[in-house]
Amino acid sequence: MTSCPNTSRNPNCSKPKATDTKAHSLKGSRGGPTDPTMAVLRGGVLKHCPASQSQMKTAIYARVSDDKLTAEGERRQDIARQAEKLTNLSEIQNWGHPILFKDDAVSAFKDDYRSRPEFCRLLREIRARRIQRVLVEDLTRWSRRVEDGLKTIKEAAEYGCTVTSAAEGEVDVTMPDGWFRCALAFMMAEWASRSMSWKVKSGMDRLRNSTEKACRSCGVVHLGRHPGSCQCRRCLKKKG
Image 1 (cartoon, rainbow, N blue to C red):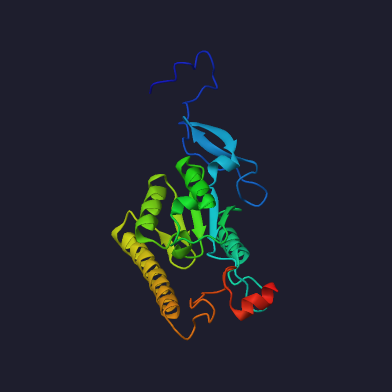
Image 2 (cartoon, helix red, strand yellow; image 1 turned 30 degrees about the vertical axis):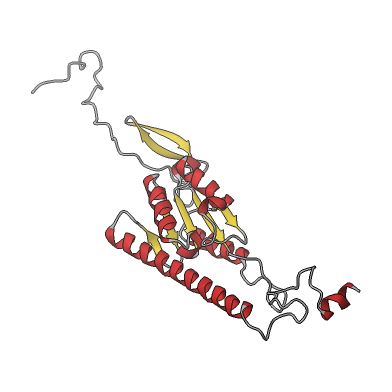
């Protein structure tokens, strides 16, 4: 039987124990990670890092197309409702308190996405890898155009950011099924916007060509308010 070479020097010497290389999170009083630090394994040694560095940063993107009011004087589209709903979702899923990005009264169909200031700021944060998850109420809040929507969601995925919709669930465009669901949602949104735009334009064209709606003074159909140059009786009465 081979003895320990250090027995002559130290009679209590025993065989060295293997180093446990598994990292264990420090437990707090309730069994969770100690705040504000957590235990991590660095080069086989248990060290501590700030909790904020080991947690996923979550953002909310909220958007409404207009700021029109209802007959009761309330906002027809409430951006605060979106933010509250998604904040509750983040807390339920233990994703922490999210950072809010919101574009109020900005269209995702008529305008290029680069004209949405908060959306562009969100993309810059994603490119800097400071955001790992974005919550939206539904994919139409992200975009109402197929090309722009797929392009920006794919870019987010390339920078390690996941887009999660409260309506459609987690979006993964790197997988065939995820790409199909995402493309279908954007396609339906763009179709609905194009259809509505065409109906409005057609209605305005019919009204513009209607002789019954023409101004008796100048013979022109005024869509909405009469221009200041109109000399019809109603306009002259208002001016007078």
